[in-house]
Image 1 (cartoon, one colour):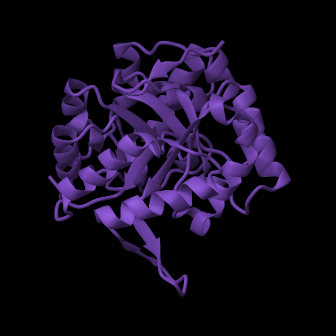
Image 2 (cartoon, one colour):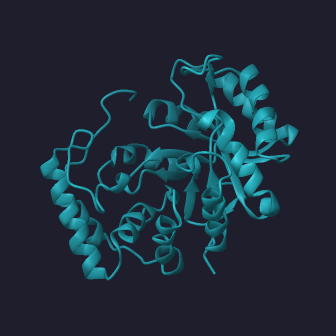
Image 3 (cartoon, one colour):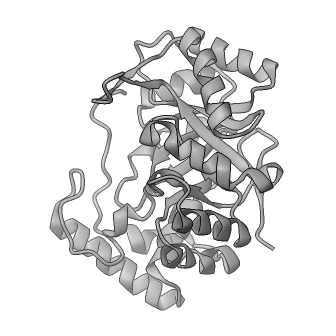
Length: 301
């Protein structure tokens, strides 16, 4: 049985591996349905989507496929971006009136009476933050959402919500190559706010793809990271996927890694870490990080 943990200071009990559903395109196809059903069979109970993905079709798919097990899963979605009527792009809509209206459309698409985790999908320091917090608090009181969180990599924005609101989580990119978000970990730990890691597998760059530049890292630095991963995974007798996910989950503040999968084969690559989690020592972390320059955010500080 997979061990569950509470997300931040919420009562939501989640498995350490979740599914980021943006990769499952095209609605409730046979393949997408099988992936979602198999994920649940493996013990995964956290499914993350957004109203932005495929203009709502992704939420529709989640609502359709997971309806029979709705009470056994944690549904997370996001709000804050509105598609233009011509479908060309979307605009940032950071207002109380928009958020309290948009939730109803997400509830309908997700085929549910409540959303477990409703996340602000971005945000800037110029937003009416107090008003946005009011919107989420109102939705909690109305029973439309259970908890709310933030999806952002901006330290200044994260800091404002961590100090002013009741967010239970922050979704952010965090992986071996991109450790910039560690700058906000102490504050989040202090406030008992969980990190939901995305991008832990660096889109396969440290698993089976040729080395190339990544953010401010050179292809040479990425190559060294590949060798570090290869060596330690072999030493521990686990796959590189297993190691990279264990790396992000080894930080106490990280409660779940949301992984984007498209196929049953990719999903089965996660089976080992779900069934056989391992502890990563500080020595292991040091070995992995050796010769990999730690990056820093250059703005939004």
